[in-house]
Image (cartoon, rainbow, N blue to C red; front, side, top):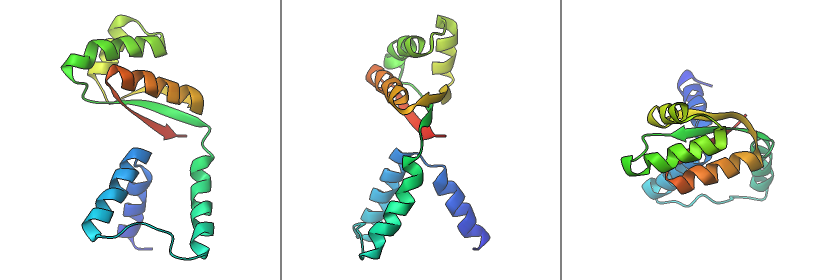
Length: 129
């Protein structure tokens, strides 16, 4: 594989699931096509490709930034609730976003944290580890 293709694969591997979905939609719109299964062999290949993503049991929770000014207080409260940090530490995280909120959390806990922070007005990314 050429170096440029290896770089592309590496860059795509670092995208979040939401960013990949947006990329898929953008490419479909740009090329005027719809991503679909082409043959009977493709579902087996797609299943094999999806298996590693399904293997993730632990996730890194990342607070994306910047946080809108009108949402900062509610996001700081949510960060304090899910991390147990003090007011100053939570404020520093929110103002310094993007920041890691939790280095490792089971899927259910990571999704619960994401839900709480999103409800407060933050953007949150989960990355499988």
